Image (cartoon, rainbow, N blue to C red; front, side, top):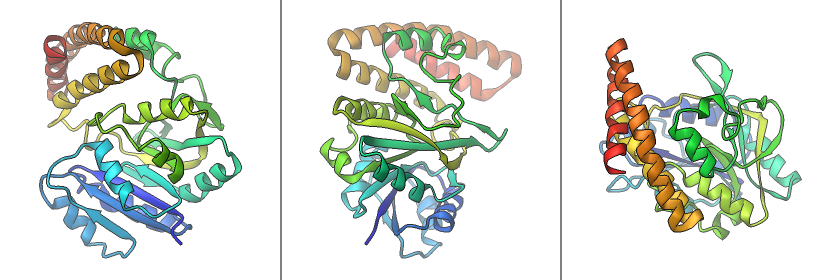
Length: 301
């Protein structure tokens, strides 16, 4: 019997997907399946996956890019495991994550969702992945660029070396019971990408479950291979603010939407100028594309 269904949504991840899948195959000791939903417009990622020729892998190839939330839900529809693990294609398993998190869920009945410790492969540091749920104060901190000096939203002062209940964990790797996922009707598909896991964590907590961080499960995370690629960074900068506004409208009502839009304008203006200045000083095209995204946030989002 399959214990764990590992669901991966890909988007032009031909450069990372083989390492990701290989690390899963080499480190997972439980009975598992891998379900890949490939949102790419071409077949480069698909062909890489097929080259592995593993009967543990199921592939879904939608006609169009469904986004992350809808892609995850599509993968979950054919999953047969008792647990679901949603994992990014730019990650590498460092140990038997599935076994560690499955055992943790079995021993902690209040656990609705749990995430592992993420390592930055460049500087070998632990990523600060634990967060409180967002509110209007976090909007202010993010829009004014003061968030990096605060411990209010991203829990920077938490060592990330101990098990802890948190408001949310980032969606790079998210482990959840099948029954709970189905009870919540999966991810809200109105979120094309970004904030789908934040919304899911909030709904978990509202139901009386807890969200945990477990540092004994470990992965490397090559952050941004899809969403922070220079070719799409302008679009993703805009999409993040669209999804954030949707989250605030959903959970805080009409005024949540209005206040989110207000702070979008502030953030777009401030960060648009900051990144434009950095692009001129450092001659960096990535910063220039980011500034374009923020100025469009200021004008349109």
